[in-house]
Length: 326
Image (cartoon, rainbow, N blue to C red; front, side):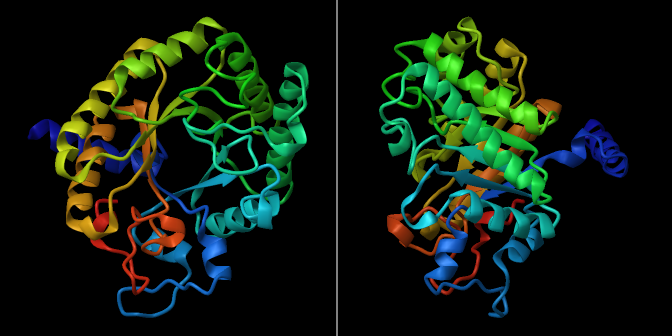
C-alpha cells in the first residue's frame, strides 16, 4: 500500500513536470461524429443540455482523440477535410490526436484491406509511392492548418496485411516496405510523432508474435504496438487477463510500448463495460511508461448507428457510466 501511495505522489509531481504519468491517453475514436451531426443527431450532458461532444468527452477526462482517414470515400466522410474539421475541434479542447490511416476508400480490418480505387492497378513500387504521398499529404495538410499529431497508425487492424494482394502477410517483405513508406512519410512531417502498428484481437499472443516477428525480420519500422479489444461481456475478465499477458510480452519481446487503440462493449451493458474498462486501464497503466493509453471506439455512436451497438451513449444522447473509469 505504501508503494501505491508513493506512486500516486510521484505521478502528482510528474503531472507538474509533464512526465510520463501525466501523459496516459484516455482516448476516444470519434470518426463518426461529424456524419452523425449532419444526420441530425445531437449530444447532451447529464442535465439534458445540448453540448459539443468534444466538450462532453473532455469533461469525462478523455484527453485524446483518434480519427480514421479514408483515401477517396463516398460522401467525403473521413477524407482530409472531414478529418481536419474533427481534429481542430479536438485540438480546441486541448485533446491530443491520433490519426489512423486505413489506406482504403472505406473500412480496413482483418477481413478486408481493399486498395483505393485510384490505386487499384498500381504496381508494388507505385503503391509504396501512394502510401508515402497520401500519408505525407494528409499530415502536411493537418500541420499547415495548425494541428499537432502525436500518433499515427500506419494501417488499421493489419493482421493479414494491407493493400491486398500485394501487401498481404504472405509476403512480409512487401508489407514491411509499405509500412516503412508510411513510417518515413510520418517522420518527414511530424518527426516526434509515434508510429503505431495495429492488430485486432489483442488477447491473441500467438498472432501478435507471428506478425511482429514477421515484419521485424523483414525490416519494418514502428514505435508502438496497437491492439483492438472487444471482449465478450460474459467473459471480459479472462480476456482482460489475456490482453495484459500479451501487452507485457510485446514490451519484453520487441522493446516497444503498447496502446489499446480500440475497446468497446455493448451499450446496454454499461455497468459491465465500466468494470471492464476500469480493469483494462489498471492493467495498461501497470506497464508504466510502456502502457501509453486506451481508446474507446466510437463511444458517441447512438445505439444502432450504422448497425453498431458498442458505443457508450444511450438513446437520449447522453453518455452512460461506461466511460466513468477515465
